[in-house]
Length: 213
Image 1 (tube, one colour):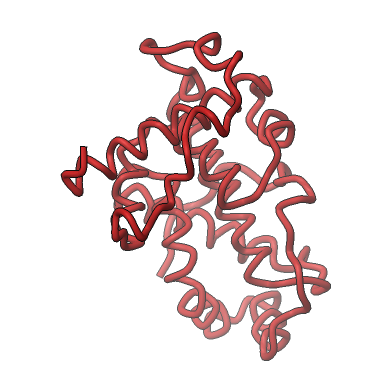
Image 2 (image 1 turned 90 degrees about the vertical axis):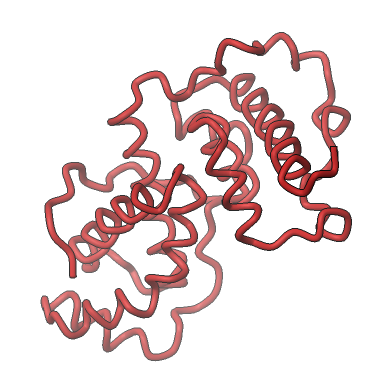
């Protein structure tokens, strides 16, 4: 099912606002105990239960399915290695998701030394005097574009790693710019600029795909 070894521990965590709301899901205690005991059957069951949802998370942080599968595999290795650290006071799915997000961030830290740069086409100063709401309206205008989830994921995979990562953390993980800056080791201004440019590029990509320009 899984092969290879994860190269980094999961000491770095998303901040508290990456919430694990709610109680532990029904039926999970036995599976968790089995995983802690190293039972392959329990690990296989957890893998099967959460593969689809976690693959969707990984796809949003990557440029293609192969890259997403690599991150997913590393993420599950970390999940099983860290199972004894899960305190069982919140959502098991939320805990797994947090590990997957951290694994995606670690992946780009290792493979792209400058992946958080803004790029050469526009700079921070292009956005610093503009209100974020004035730069772009929400890209999620499904009634206008008739979008499917796959359309959005495909467009997100065409963003640069910098824009894609900040967009994910802000929109899907509901982190503040300060939290994103602390997590990625960038400035708040860079986080805001990357988000604005991500929205701009994403909207252009979606309109182009639907021939609405």
